[in-house]
Image (tube, rainbow, N blue to C red):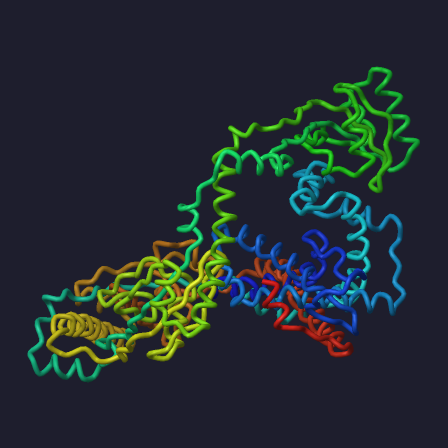
Length: 625
């Protein structure tokens, strides 16, 4: 998972979008990063201006949620840290401040209508017809936790910073020679014939004698080495286990329900149609038509060329709308067009189409959920309290077992733990909290660890009782394993010799068909492949497809996968036509320009950072995660 994240954040696609990444903070939460206020811990400083650790923590959590959402799978907090995400987040926040400083120095201004134009032209807010869609705009802002006014204020800074980066990146173009070379490289098509040589079966290679087995065992000690094992005694505190023992009374539930009533309120939601005009005169004209009986959708189509399908915003709460618009929508009776209402986006006319009243859930309706919440909260509090008591007991010099006895805690023993958290039988050991294995293998024999947080819901302390170093297993105990390994190795070697012999004959007379027939092998022919279409032909073994484009001047190749070797020969190499080359060159022009622009922008930002006093408090970052 870590490697996949690293590949994601360092890919050319991301580099090509670097400019967008730097400017995209506004939608995901960097508001008020540099606001003055009460003294608090800082995560970084830019020329003495602090980036609060609290602001860094908020931004980090938002970016972590985005990554998990885009990955479509849970990503552990430790994996996110090791992937470099904390450094990426603080760097982006620093670059935002540096760009603001540069804009101040250049005295850059933002025209009043530039923000509105930028929003209207943002593809994220457009429908399939390429038109600004207020519903999409509202939904994206709602997901980001912003209202319209907040976003407009943030977008102003975005546009201002964008003026600097666009002036740097837009002038970059890719040389024609580079574009043509890459287009020719990806458009070239190759066709090959190949024969598959399956690995022989274990029976076909026979059984080794004792001398051969001993020699193979001695030559490959790494195949037969047992890992280091550690015998561990531990106390593991688990909030989930504690929660099962915690009783929640009716009185507790009633008190919690009263204190958290707002959590169980379902606010009123309204669906409405809206028209947005650039000026008050147009809005008044539209309103006159509507009160005169004109159809709402028809007015939108006639005056704004707005698709009727894109008029409606559904199930919107009042706090998701700008104050003025929210007041109009939630005071307007259903089915009646409102008077024009002004917001920073223009003049709105709305017509409420549906009202979903707010509701208040009863205690019985949320009993199970509230009970689980209280148990979790109390278990977490209990975990901290018990952990403190355990830490105090160990601090008084008590042995681990004595501390457990005093606090009525369970002591667990693990006779053998390997670096992968497995026992001597190779089975995963159940119930090991995060960081447990790493702690066990960083603690000396006979020593106890400090009380360690596995994750937000576990604490543990352990003692390493014994260490069994990694050692080569006795030959007699792995003789069957050695036999299987020898046979597997022999199968590969025999197939390799056969494949290399066949390839040598082909190189000498260039006739793969005759050589394959002599070996009673089936000759297969690939379709015409290009480097851009390798993944679209699953019928061609991947090693063959890759070898086709790595073949040298002799045009013959040998490849292999887990089950077979392949011997092949190129039969055709086709250069792209002039028309295809020109089409690809045009397509590559924009891609290469983006990549080169990203490099230039990156160099500019690095230079900007060197010019200013930038400091990062790594310890504060760690405490904020």
